[in-house]
Image 1 (cartoon, chains in turn blue, cyan):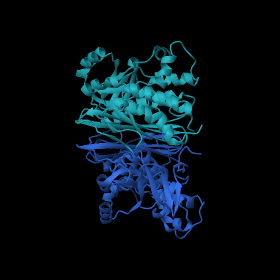
Image 2 (cartoon, each protein chain N blue to C red; image 1 turned 60 degrees about the vertical axis):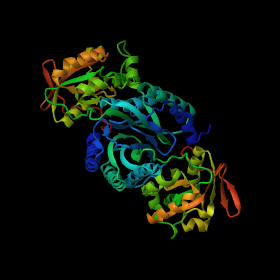
Image 3 (tube, each protein chain N blue to C red; image 1 turned 30 degrees about the horizontal axis):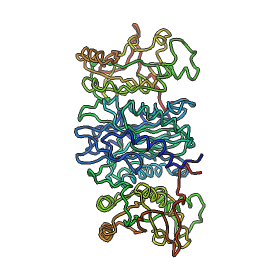
Length: 320
Length: 320
């Protein structure tokens, strides 16, 4: 079939996007640019991320999962800033305008958009090797965003959810790992359908001194907080929230360097810890204290041993 | 040399970006997301465009030209909406992190950013086939943006600058055209260093009923205005602003379908024409009346002939 770029955009994106447009969107998809009226008293939080086939998702990933994940990882950046999702733009590059691919892609995209309550307002499609750039925008009350730069010595380090599941999912798909009853679908889902922790928003605004989403692995992402805050950290390996399989096999690298978890890693003043945990419990949010911020150095305690993490390699897109 | 992704971003982008950050940028490049405080009483205008190597620019284009053009074509979308550039995000995908490529790319990018007065606030780099996504944002006083949808029968059709030069430049580079004294560097520059018509902003806000930037060729882009405004048009071939070579050789396809011109095509009420032309003249803006909006049909007058343009093919990224 022959679809020109414009009817293609209209069929799969514009027509569906117009249904979800919120009241801040004055002009949505289909013009030179979108026009948005941000609400008063908010700051705009803006992020962009590109996913490349074979690099950020395995070849043969379902089109709907590719789309879902592309939006989820961008919304996760908003979640890490304690922002509320508002609107996004999509640039989709693909080898050919296949009808089935586009229909499935749009299904995954709008499923994610609906879950995360974010509106597609603009985009671009062109031909080339498969890659997806999404630029996501959110709002945060003025002055209430959380950056990577505010951690102070004595702060506790917390993380939401479990670490390492997406990396286990990837290892299963790539058959680097034998199927195991303790792993399976939850790990594959963690890889293909990551859940940005938008439920953490209020907790972060209230308590966090610094925050980041775990996209490159715990060590690499915590290092960003340490560098930008000018501090060190000590984490406790036994406290890391991981599936039993990782603990039993002592395969903590999945959690430390695996990436793609999209949990929130944050720091908070020690005196606020009990109140934050109580509030999290009441909201059904799973948090674990994994260590504390120190003056300098970056180490992990493993029983009585102390491992230096300052040169430990996380996942790096240019590291071969 | 070995550069990891983070030191690479820091060296070529973060350090240089921080120098140019304007007062609306609260948190710039280097965190999970940027934080911006839009000024009061403005609407935010947002656009995204991806340029793919070999498709949107010829292979062997200089890295500085690639960067310059990538930003220029996005800023051109803002210009077409009558918006003022504010900030942008960059996603750069490339096969390897070459030091020279990155230095040259950053040079071209910041040269363009400085000319267009727009700040880099965030980005993403990853490995893959060379492609550049830029998401550009501007401000427009509330209610003063110009869309594609407001053209009315009887409006005149105007265009800025000359049409077809970038397409001539591409033909010269690809040696589909013999070098000619009437062509040359201005055409190559039009291709590699397009100039978004930010000087048109006030004129558009004051007079335009609809506007678009000419990226896909005059016919294709005017068709967008016609479709979204629900009207027709009659344009006069003899009036098209083109270099003498096109007129002498009767090679108007370069102007009609060539693309990449990034001039502004707009409509305005006939009674405002003289005043708009006078104001343009006073501001050094080159405008040409090329036709008028009609009730329906899309035709071009060529001497006494009337050509139907409704099925004329403009440049289409999915058209093979």
